Amino acid sequence: MIRSIETLLVDVPTIRPHKLSVATMRTQTLVLVRVFCEDGIEGWGEATTIGGLNYGDESPESVKANIDAHIAPLVVGMDARNVAAVMATIRRVIQGNRFAKCAIETALMDAQAKRLGIPLSELLGGRLRDALPVAWTLASGDTTKDIAEAQDMLEARRHRIFKLKIGLRAVADDVAHVLAIKKALGDGVSVRVDVNQAWSELEAVNAIAALEAGGVDLIEQPVRAGNRAALGRLAARFSVPIMADEVLHGPQDAFELACRAQADVFAVKIAQSGGLVPAREVGAIAQLAGIALYGGTMLEGAVGTAASAHVFSTFGELAFGTELFGPLLLTEEILAEPLVYKDFMLQVPTGPGLGIEIDKDKLAALRRR
Ligand SMILES: O=C(O)C[C@H]1C=CC(=O)O1
Ligand SMILES: [Mn+2]
Image 1 (cartoon, rainbow, N blue to C red):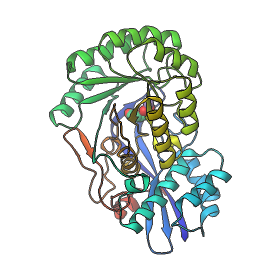
Image 2: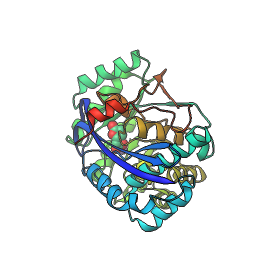
Image 3: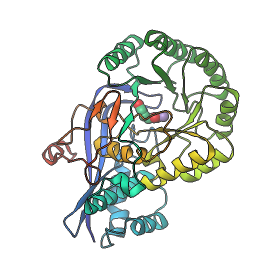
């Protein structure tokens, strides 16, 4: 039985300012959810977003308030061992709130997998890989600093895929910034851009032509999420793959984008999808439609990152790798044993549940009062 649900906000400074077209992050607010079950087992989930309400339509505070006031009272007392039934009730009764739903589903699945003594990935059909390629995002706002940062990552064998955050400056300046980085890093390194919806279709046409010619190998959400037709026209026009991110809020969007061939690649995010099972469904739709997969992040900490890793480990095809570097952007570690990043990959945890152990003293010291 689900005995109680606790929600925590944890503000952690980032290692440097992280500049997106929609926000400059200096701290990240982790939204953590802990489900206590009658049998003594507890599960953890996460509903972290980016930049308050700058990125998505749920904020850390709204997630906490809505879980505390609406979701927890709905499910306390239900059978914790029947995760599907609990989630079906939540999805029937609660509108929207995809991040909150994801955190609850993660915590319930963490608890259930611990109960069964298996890694969470095995509740989702089973893993096909034990390690995932991990991109790093260059977003210091400064070309020279970004190049130096990328070179350090290459040398440390931590990342060899780089995603550049653009869309804040004039288009020509952004293009020059990207091409300078691509030139400095060379052919063996994958350079991609994430525009976070900042361009008009016309700006996108001109910029993508230059980026494609310069060897950039992926263009993420160049135009606003509401303009799916423009995304589809860009996907048809260019050979460099166009990736859907903000437009993709779960299986229904995945289905519609796939039907209209409006993206070449899906950035699958567990929270944006509304949970771990819906994220698996987004992956299944992509695979049926011949759309390539990328494992995305909302810059979650260790809990959401581990949960994402379990989901992405079940994907048969993951052509563009992942960007599960969230914990590495933070100045504080909240796990007793950090997640393992080595040889350009994140190791998918192998222990029961999420396979992580929270440092509770650390959390107690960091949580918002
Ligand atoms: O993809 C996004 O839009 C959000 C996020 C992912 C990596 C990063 O730096 O920001
Ligand atoms: Mn993105």
